Length: 146
Image 1 (cartoon, helix red, strand yellow):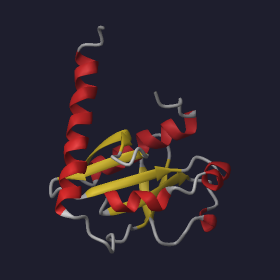
Image 2 (tube, rainbow, N blue to C red):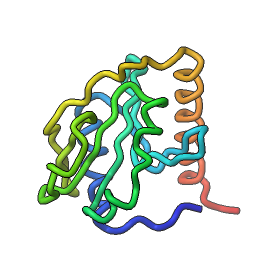
Image 3 (cartoon, one colour):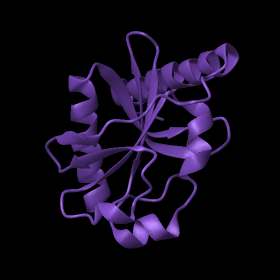
Image 4 (cartoon, helix red, strand yellow):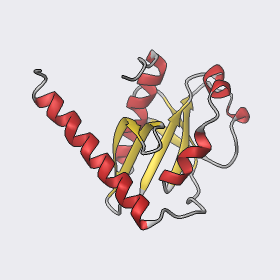
């Protein structure tokens, strides 16, 4: 079971999820990849493009967690999402950047297309994993019983 997220991370996830929806992505929070890594948010658009968003709620959170390059093998677009008052100059320049709060977000720096496009088998695997995770969550919501 995942560790509980702090309030700031939960609020950012909600705002970023709304932004992704406005951009045409359907998203899931806490999406587990085949590698075992858990993306804070993952989204898929109508074309099957996959975006992963890593939320950093504080400087300490960013400094303690440098696993973000491992997500690049599973997405077409990668973003950091941070609160509005985050010192963005400490973040790497390569990924996209989303400034967010509990209600929405804005893309401060577009994510570049992944220079290493996803292989068709990897895209299929991530898409199926996404669909199954969404179906399982919906099923638990519809039938929370044992």
